[in-house]
Length: 171
Image (cartoon, rainbow, N blue to C red; front, side, top):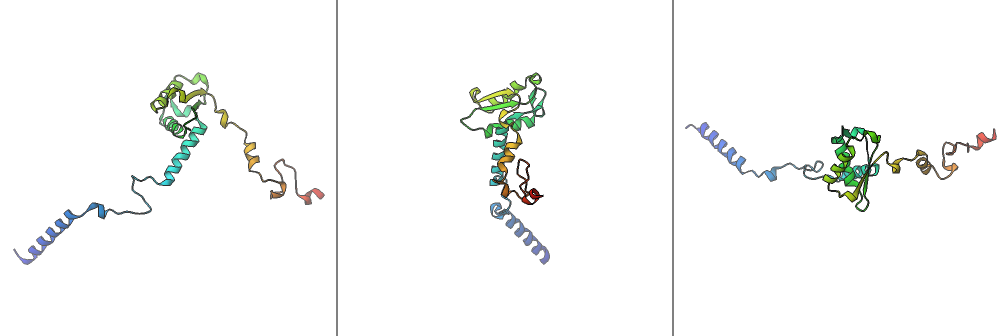
């Protein structure tokens, strides 16, 4: 064996030994900005909770949530969010916002999905029509956002539409 072959053989053996002895836990690259997949960032936890509370407050399923009489994946996801966002002491009321003649087993499909989710029958109800708790005119919400007095309104017009600008009132 010549000298170059011996050196090449020693290098190959060294590489094999170093490769076999490496500790993968120590060589794993960790970035503080990108946590591992098994760690759920707090922002995602908050986002999921808000989606669940919003779905439970809305509590309505539409035609788009069904394929015939069965819940489709969108309907299953929304119903799952409703169950997650439900307050423990208050029964969940699910509204099927569609004509009652369009039922064709949809109510039974929703009840079955709620039972599979682990809710006992006394913890939920299914009704037809829109959720009356979310039906309100926007005017009340807009008035609640309005400034306290006409002087605080930069446009010079209060919410009732009358002018509060003294310069235009003198003319």
